[in-house]
Image 1: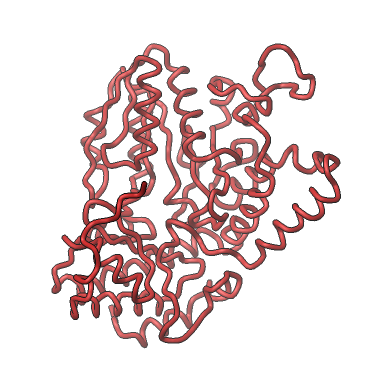
Image 2: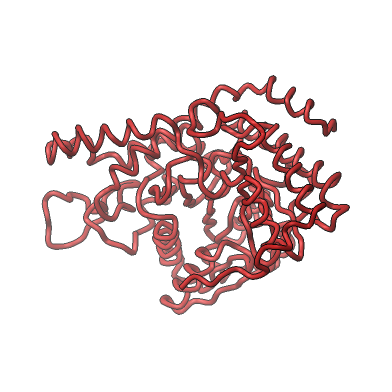
Length: 421
């Protein structure tokens, strides 16, 4: 692989997605001192069309339309869900609902799945999964008198299928897994994981937060049962943007949401005395949809759909290959280790490096105009977003990284993170 900056420039010149950069705030900046944003897997950049979309809702639909705009808002959660399904998730209509947070959606689907398997008393997750997933699993298990079977997953390489297989038996009700590991970017083997879980008679609940918008998901084609995910990372919906949930069509009547809100009621405007779940995906609704936030999600998700996930995933693989190759050439000799799968087919769109002083390195990178992410215990995570990150952005960020290692300027930064109080 040619590791020259000229080669990175050539990749940018041939990039079929290059035109999307100009549609995001700050992404098209040039110059040696520009900000190099490699944290798109934590919070995506703002699309330039987002303020107008939000303003339209606020100034026209709300300020002028007032309650008369309810006819536009009432079905927003399912309408946008269908758009996400068709453009990003590989899911047919009537299976995706937008609203609430990832955590709330995870709770709803996990509790519903566990209740639908009353003769089973075990929930499975990995010890290295994102904290909120593990916390929700523990809470549902405690409330229902179930047992959590927390299995090991390599912090860098991800889930071992043999370890998963050994944890599955007739007691397991639901398995909760992330498609892309939040720390290392390790990508799960969807086909094999699905086969193993279904052979055990359990339901599989995917967390797609670090995958959606970066790697192909294809929920219908892979036989997925349940899924949740956020929209503020690669989908660029903005901080606190509403999340989504997916329930396969043939499972919907079998499952019942544990939060019986009026937006999940069959005839919600009848204001009846007893809760009766709506038909289809709407039964997983809870309260009034976050209309303003949805306007931002629609813009960001629309750009991802327009770019097409196949093209985004291909660019993501090439960008992360460049990160790995530059890391081998420049960082490893200085004591840094790759902390992600080496093969592009086994990872999502971010790469992580390990170093004993990773927290200091992260601070030094920010000081030099590179925005990465720190992840415990000693990881620097770099997440180029294929939709708007340039190859020269990756090259320049890694160049600044090696300079920091060479001059040891990172040693001037605090060795421990300040505790938030």
